[in-house]
Amino acid sequence: MSKYVMGIDQSTQGTKVILFDLEGKIAFQAVKPHKQFINDKGWVEHDPNEIWRNVKTLAQEITQGNGISARDIVAIGISNQRETSLAWNRSTGESIYPAIVWQCARGAAICDELETQGLKTLVKDNTGLPLSPYFSAAKLAWIMRNVPEAAKLASEKNLCMGTVDSWLIHKMTGGNVFKTDYSNASRTQLFNIKALAWDEKICAAFGIPIDALPEVTFSDSPFGKTTFDGVFDVEVPIWAMLGDSHAALFGQGSHAAGQAKATYGTGSSIMLNTGENLIQTEQGIASTIAWGMNGKVSYALEGNINYTGASITWLKDDLKLIASAAETETLARQSNPADKSYFVPAFTGLGAPYYDNDATGIFAGITRVTGKNEMVRAVVDSIAYQIYDVIHLMEEVSGGELVNLKVDGGPTRNAYLMQFQSDILNKPVAVPPLAELSAMGAAYCAGIAAGFYDREKVFAGLSWKQYAPNMNADERDKLLKGWSTAIKKAMSKG
Image (cartoon, rainbow, N blue to C red; front, side, top):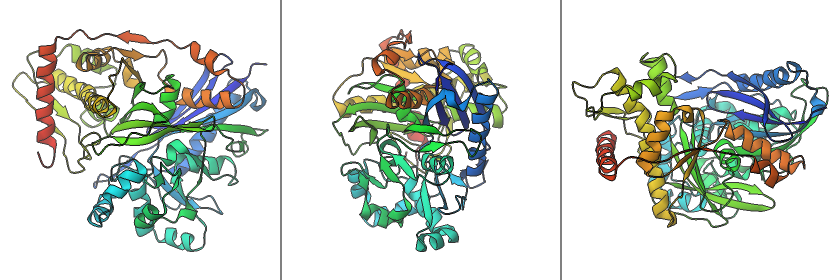
């Protein structure tokens, strides 16, 4: 019988479950979306119980639907949306409030409080992250302040708080395992990335009880076993856990210092591997842990953009300008070259490298030649511009120049966007043959840890489609100056 590694990618928009064969190729896959709850305050939430139900449903669908026995699955690897935060009852496993999604900035006032207390520098120095409601700490602090059951459970030592990975592990193992890995912990703004432990002073400042947080371990370590709440008739070992962007970096084969990738999803994560060298900067990018593997921790620089693919969703679902994301490529190509409009997608402020929570989205430079096609092109181009700004800063901070940029995610299917990305970066852009790099990275990590995959052999089979820059320098500079002007107009202090 064939054997497989299961990759579970629990992302912002939905959950994917993919089975990879002995050669590391996709054999079967299934996907299920979950509902996005957004209110008039701009708060963004998910139902954690819906996410757990979807994981179980997909595990059943991909096995029973394809005639596969649970005994044919040798290991499970999980990648997950990261800063999204939730709290639950340790004894019952029941969530006490919806999951607060990474896009949600409701914790801004809490961050402002800590800044007035003079803790901004401490937070950045110890966690590598700029003080921002983007990360988990302020979201969990909001729960502690606003959900009465959280304080009650905390007083009883019966509270669990964490990101989606620790929630899933707790549910998958029937409450027996409460863990996270170094990559996810490093994105909470509660973890000291130098000491490799929860930071007592920072946790206290946010009002987060350390005993409510999960055990932190290596990304390629055992995370228990699961039957998916009885879906499988035997237990299957969980051998890997990685935040989705870290999993994509690993899946891209960017294992050495100086290698970078950009993941195009709801938002975007641009990550530069710095190896065992922790590089810290006061500028608008974060220092983080890439992963902990083979008994060692590797670091990275990362910039997170709030809205990239989500801007395309906005065009489709809210403005009704397009019927599907696939239309954007054709419409962008058909746009009038004389149009010089820009779109800044600051729906809930701006992430890296600007970190302006009060910025607002704008269309700038609109003229009589600006129509539907031009608006769509401006939205698509905004993705490439934002990624340029992060890459440019990373090169300055690290002192090195990228040879190329590896990319992944659904929007990489848009050939117009990929060519424009290459042009505006003036670097080759490499697109892998499959978009699901997060699930693949987690599955490969699990398969290697379980002894199912040989690391060198499984990565040797990867190949990329290359886009080479062909824009002249004057045109590039002109476009970038226009983008810089638009960004300044969008920013709260512009």
